[in-house]
Amino acid sequence: MLHALEQRLGSRVAFLRTYCYGLCMGTADALPGVSGGTVALLLGFYGRLIAAVTALTPGRGIAVLRGYDPDRRERAREALLEMDLQFLLPLGVGMVTAVALIAGAVSALSESHPLALFGFFTGLIAASAVVLFRSLTLSTVQHALAAAAGTGLALLVAANVLQLPGSGAVLIFLSGALAISAMILPGISGSLILILLGQYVFLSSELTAFLQSIRDLVLANGTLAGVLEPGTTVVVFVAGGLVGLVTIARLVRRALDRHRGVTLVFLVGLIAGSVPAPLHNVGEAHAWTSETILLTAGWALVGAIALFALDLLAGGFDPE
Image (cartoon, rainbow, N blue to C red; front, side, top):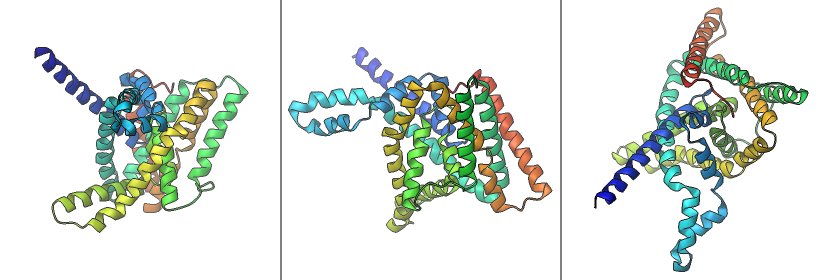
């Protein structure tokens, strides 16, 4: 009986610990310039995260669904263990909790204090690019070209010269695929991708509206139609994320395995080229006067100091 109690307490502690990991990772990914993958590295569960994500295959999913058949139940149990759902589920719940909380704050601040918010984000992104490039070496022409390609691509996207194909649901789906894939990569934040694509504020607002509409419905103050409108956006984004996890994320991991140096330099180049992206949101809310420039620079400095302080406390960020 004592052994059973110890096992039960141990499983609950493990669940809570993994949930807290998810909170940390979700908070990082909800802020541009700080990577959830880097947090996973620092906290020591990155290897398990990658193993679990890459184990999410259609074959294992089908095996689990066929678990109703007694003859296939053993294979279903094996598939569940291989996918490490006892780790992924509390981690995912923790991430969703953190993202939901920060999305509400971002949605409010983007309306009340856009200059402070996006100035701060600019500093975070710029400082993260400096920190990550500092840990890499541009030892070959190939590395230099990869860095230039990543930076140039991000600058073109930030300037709206290059855009994802489609609009509406298609754009949201593709944004989800790219952003959630980035969440598991050290050095790149999912929210950075959304800022680069111009979807960060919109999706934060939609998530906040969705959660608010659910609360109103539970309290009998809302309607089902009020839930469906933002809910559709959230579902399309999540669907894109699930597709991205089993496609784009795998391609990037394969590139890291085969051409690690070049791929890392390209990815950090994307971060460097994304520095001007938040400034478009500032320009939409304020005319570019000398006062606006000074205030934006001041908040960017605050963001940069915060990132450098985090880097110092963590003992250095390593994109690998």
